[in-house]
Amino acid sequence: MIKYEDVSNPCRPLEQCIEWAARISEECFSQTEAVSALQTEEEKKLDLTVAMPAFDRNTCSIPKSQISFIDYFVTDMYHAWEDFVDLQELLQHLDNNFKYWKGLDEMKLRGI
Image (cartoon, rainbow, N blue to C red; front, side):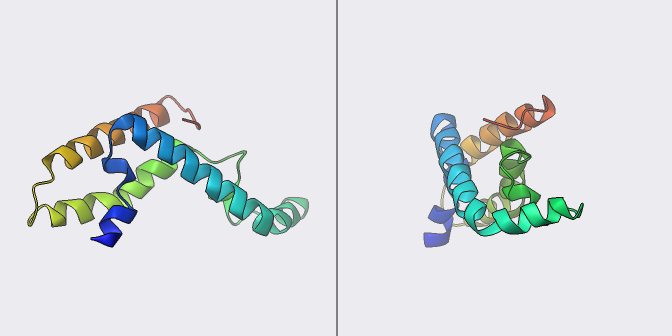
């Protein structure tokens, strides 16, 4: 149950989903900028591929990261849990939010 709650953001109403995606992205950027800044800058100086582009604030696509998160972690987990609990409302939010992020991605938008 704790893990379900931990990854529940995409199952919330769209406004809350967007708000928390922004907060989580900012937290991720802030934490990784300090740690990876030197590594990333060194990679760029040496003309190497940046090893952690998902954490580069300048190139990260929040819609793509949300789509991946939903695809890899949330969808199957919530559908499995549905065998035990009625999650129709949460799954509807999940579907709506996935479509929102997909729409932004299709418009080539990187932000929220």
